[in-house]
Length: 163
Image 1 (spheres, rainbow, N blue to C red):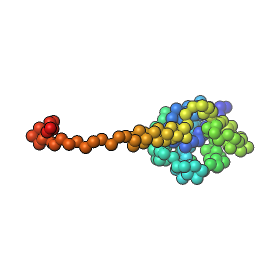
Image 2 (cartoon, helix red, strand yellow):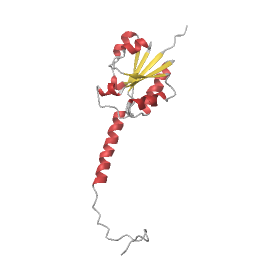
Image 3 (tube, rainbow, N blue to C red):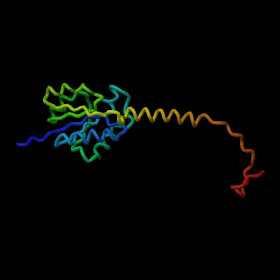
Image 4 (cartoon, rainbow, N blue to C red):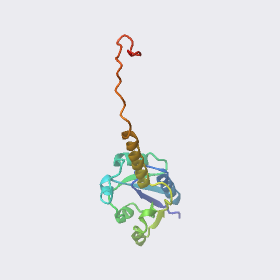
């Protein structure tokens, strides 16, 4: 008798990028039912700065993907109740959390830490945007003050100026 596998992919999914998609696709390949938990703004704010993209938008983006069978809010970092209630067999999370979720193995859950490696992360994207913005401010704010235009405006010919 075949037993279907339930996979749970956990994440914030802020500033959705290619590594998020790869992790969700990876989870899809590990089982039959794919559930994606999207961390709420309140949860994320409990351990780091709030996400740039609000929860309602992040969960809508994940819900619009092809692979998830179910997308749910994630309100806690303790996933014992989640894996029990949803009969999760496999838990997937980014490798920046290694080995924080090894305790789920005691419940018979296989835990996979998806390797982001040298790829993109939301934190890296935020830093890149911030650095580019700082440079933009310098480029915009440091400029010569122009001389005032001493020509008068000709009401009858808006393209011409008086000498």
